[in-house]
Length: 459
Image 1: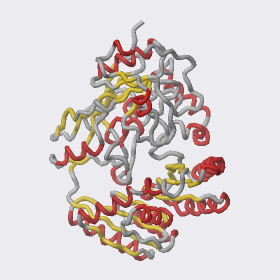
Image 2 (image 1 turned 180 degrees about the vertical axis):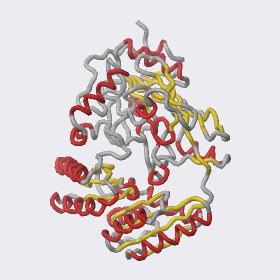
Image 3 (image 1 turned 45 degrees about the vertical axis):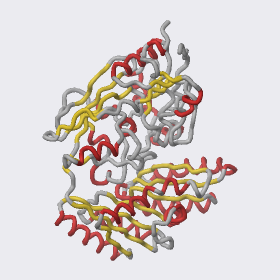
Image 4 (image 1 turned 30 degrees about the vertical axis):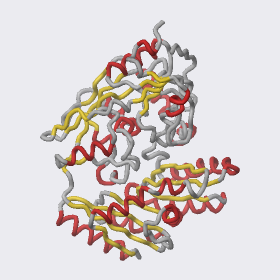
């Protein structure tokens, strides 16, 4: 029988304990030690590894930078981790057709920087964009603040090259702006969390760089007024490129973490950015400022790069800042219809009072995607976990969804039957079986109890 080290060049297979530990966890704080880690540099090498895994009924976990929040890259059941970090080439920038071709290990921010010189723009901007990979973004269908105007990763993926679980290489989708031949497998694969195959090449649509950007900081002494402003701005006909929300506890946490000059006494703030043609953006910014002022907001304009950068540094500091409040932080990325944000916030405050546990909220209010953080100490972990289900119940009652951009992975899989009925889940499992009949590809993710029954590890 062949061993894993026989099918890849020397140095591409890691089995030492200290190496394995580095690939045992992601941003969910869950961890499990893999049996081996491989670092391929070509599609053919990925294919060889997957074919080997299929022949030996051994689970495989694709991995980008490990920035996922729901445990999608955690190697359950002694898996082979296929780390795609070395497949990091920007293969082609087709500026005439505004299409770029990349490998999955390309860092999101690196692509943005590279195409700027061509006056091109790739909008999806997850908070971890300085170090997350495009392959991981595609696997999770990552979003970000700009989703309100520009959409999410799925809206920019024209096609994919992928190694399916028997080791074959397929190419799905197109490199044109339109294409309706057969089922849309591209949109199925985007967001499938590595359960259907391993992405080895991505064809992305990009757009022209906006001419102008203006950022507004709108401070409120009343939470309802902030929520009302969100609805009024969106009803005005102006679509901001971002509309971010931070509650009082989030503001205080950020300021205690690092002094950005945010107003610690405020009940809420909105970070609103507009981009596009210079004249249109300037007029839109004036209208948005007027709307927020009329709702009781104190509005400041950041129209130079330094001021904007400072505000976004404060926004990106939220997650690390919250870890300084409590040793246990459960982060859920729920979404409700925008008009229901005020009711959601009131319901969360009621849960906070009833449970006696702090709930901190921030996120992408413009598209209804609120990051709800349950803060507790280890002694109250059971209470915190029970609070998750209660928050999901409120979210679904308000017509929302339990995951807007973090996926399901292992942390949300116990709750998917709250949102999906049995027929829907079985249909999805059936699709998984068509791609992966022996369930070697990222088993244990999305569907609770959907595990590989037997595995051997001839490494």
